[in-house]
Structures are given as C-alpha cells and as structure tokens.
Length: 220
Image (cartoon, rainbow, N blue to C red; front, side, top):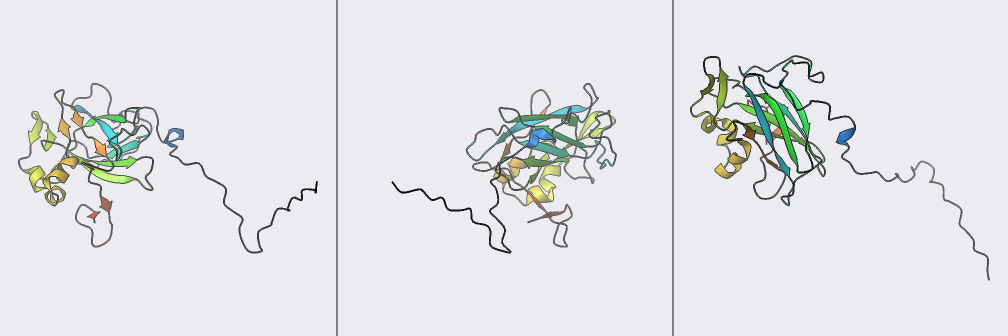
C-alpha cells in the first residue's frame, strides 16, 4: 500500500487576502438594544396615556418573534420634544420608545396621543422596524384613526378632514392608505399591525434630505 501524501497548506499569493471566515446571521437585538421599560414612554396612570400595540407579520403571514419596533412622536401639543432621558425612564416624556416583539410577534407601548405639528394636519407616530431578513431598518407612519389631539378642555378634540387632507395619505390608493392608520380598540387603545411583505403590506417610506424631498422629508 502506497503512502498517503498530504499537500501542504497553500499560502495566499502576495498581495492577496485569505478567505473571509464564515459569519453567523443575526439579528442580535437582545444583547444591547432592548432595555428595561423601553416601551413605557409615560408612567402608569398618566392622564391621557394610551396603549399603542400590534403584531409584526412576515411575507407568509406568520408573526415575527424577533423584531424591534421604535417610535418617535410629538407631545400632545404637537411639539417635537428635545429633551434627554429616554434611556433613564425617569418620568421625562421624550417622545421616543423601543419595544421588542414577543413569541407571537406582538409589541406594545404606553404613551400619549401625538398632536398635530401644524393646524389641520393629521397626528401620527413615526415607526421604525428592525427584523430578521432586513438589510436596513424600515420607516413608516401610524396615524391616529380619528385624527385626534389632546385638548386642555375636554381631553380630545377632532380635526375634521385631517386624514383626508394629509399629503402622504392623499397620494396613496385607499387600500394602501389603510395600512398607515391605527385602529381604535373598544378599550381606547390603538392597534397598528406591521406586515413586512405580501397581501396588505405596510407602506414603508424613504426619507430624503435632498432638494427633491417634500415638506415632511419623504422622498420616493
């Protein structure tokens, strides 16, 4: 029987890099991004507090158990909050929150109804989605269904026609427009489901800071 000869390992040619080692596919949201009470923008029992909740679905209609949702919003008066304290959760309302989905793809926030940034405009939450299979985060909006904003007199005041007159919503077909509007539940909470692909896919936005961007900074 002849001897078995093992070829020596080949060194990379001069000036060339060796093969890149294999990488483990994420996401790894659980290491640093979620933090205690990240989904609680206000304390329990805060006057005017509302629960924003929903489910994230993939293209096959299955819930996504490892997604991460962030929201940004104005305060009830329609002012963009510019205060630190989000990570501390010390009772300061900063208009920002972060929530991971559970095993059923569900998420929730305790927050306040956002106010309109301009008279007659429809209030909305800015929503960002991180999830497996996404090369980058996705941006969308979650409008209040009845276009309400907090009012010092009676708590909530209607803004007639605000949804219909919103430039973004008006540019969409009715069935696509519906994916950006929350549903008011019987208990007063707001439901906003996110569908990443497939039937009823949520409308996602591209933000462009260039001259072609609209007033809301939304490009095509």
